[in-house]
Image 1 (cartoon, rainbow, N blue to C red):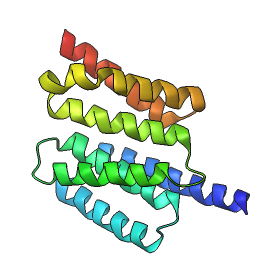
Image 2: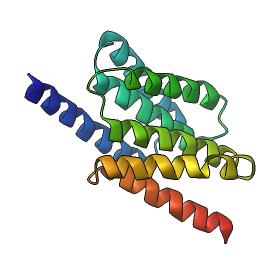
Image 3: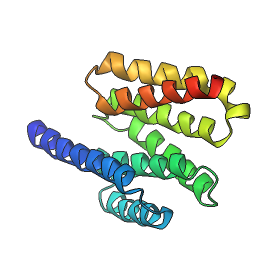
Image 4: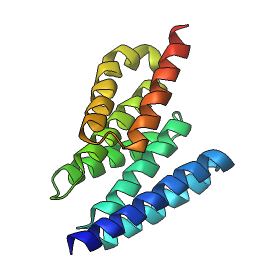
Length: 159
């Protein structure tokens, strides 16, 4: 049973990564991203005891927010993403590395929204979450990629 759950989760993760890569490659419009978030909300509501749809929902919500930091919908999307992450933390079987990655991404979005105000406030929180995610799972590609992007962005911002 656990193996089946893991296989389903792995398939979902592959789907999410493909979606992330696709969204960056095609520069999806904000409307397309919002439609994807709405679909994931419905999927998550149909499977309330499943971690996979929650993970996808949080990740895509954060993708929308980081790409549209000042859009009118962003605050609601971020509140929903944080709530979803909090729900995942309370679930048995939630991958702690993935949770740390999502938490780091959440605070990274806050920095992107207002670097002057939030940079110093959340920098350590972002770094601690990504570092913990990678300690828990050194092969967490999302944590690796987000940490790298974060460090690149911070270097550009300080230069």
